[in-house]
Image (tube, rainbow, N blue to C red):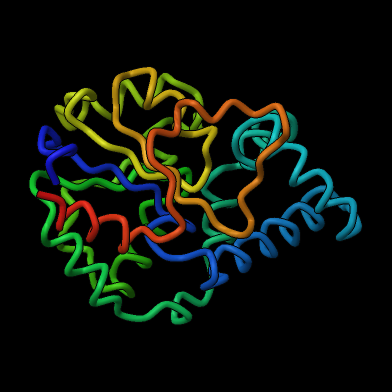
Length: 221
C-alpha cells in the first residue's frame, strides 16, 4: 500500500459504497421516499417521483428539498424511508477482511441516518471497524456535497484531510473532499450518473469493486 502509506483515516459513504449497488437495498428507500411524498403532498406516485428526483439533484438530498419547500419534519421522513428490509444484506467476510487490513481509523459519512448505517453495518458484520458515523442529523441536515459538513466532520473526529481517503459512489460528493486534500476513490456502478460535461478530475481513483481495490492496494509493495 505504498501510494496510500500516509493515510490515517478511511472515510466511507454507506449506500451503494460499503455494500454493492447490486444488492438493491437503496431501491427500497427510493420507493419509500416516493410513497412518503405522494401521501404528504397529495400527489400521484408519478408526480411524487418527479419531485423526489428534482429535489435530489437540486439540493443534494430529497429531504433537504422537502424541508426547505414544504416544512417536512426530518425525523418523520427518515424514520419512514429507512423502515426497510435490511435482511437482503448478509455477512461480508471479504469486506471484513479488507477492513481489518487497513491501518488507522475508519468512519462512515452518510446522507442517511445513523440508525440506517448501523443496521447496514450489523448485517455486513463490519460495525466493529468504525470509530464513528457522521450522519445527516450530525450535519444539521445539510447534505453532501455542501463543503461545510465535510469541514465539521473532519474537525469532530480530528481527521487531517491530507492523511485521509474518501470512498463514494457519487463523484459529485468527492469534490469537496478533494478540495480539502483528501485522496478520493469513486465507487462506480451501473446506476452511476455522469453527464457529458461532468469534470471527473477530482476522482483520483476509480473502481467498481471496493473490496478488490482495497485488497490490490494491500498487496502493493
